[in-house]
Image (cartoon, rainbow, N blue to C red; front, side, top):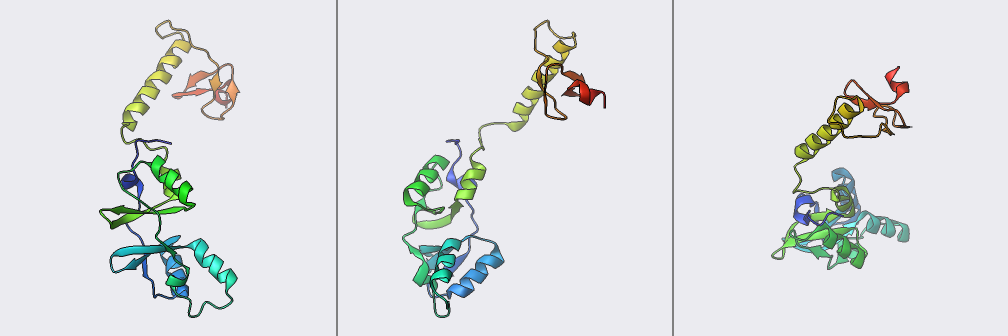
Length: 190
């Protein structure tokens, strides 16, 4: 996991909130409507808990009737929190340590957003310090140099003609450049 990416860079600043007195059925409908898997329970502006899809499902299985069930009845009090300046590794450790798939992101005791397990997994390959265009230009230059050498027009450095065909994805012992791609004999002849 990339330690250079912070929670603040990947957290969701928009979140769905509910009051502890709200009905669970209405809150579940709101979760579906907003397409979220967690709701932050607020008392004024203070986050006091959270309700997840799993909490709603467990309650629905345990109770035949959800009438009269409030958010306060099922919410997780004192939800786990993380600061926006912390690394994704820290967030992952915190999720593992608290057995939670969601963390409230707080700064100076104020709610700044929410980060989910999905957010961490999605963002784990990000590196804000890498200029992607520069990396892609370097990769193209390396491929072009290998192609030129394989065709006998390069600097004299020796490269193997073995590799993965860029069209069909098979391992080939005889790649050649065709239309700007390294391709196997079968794909070149198509």
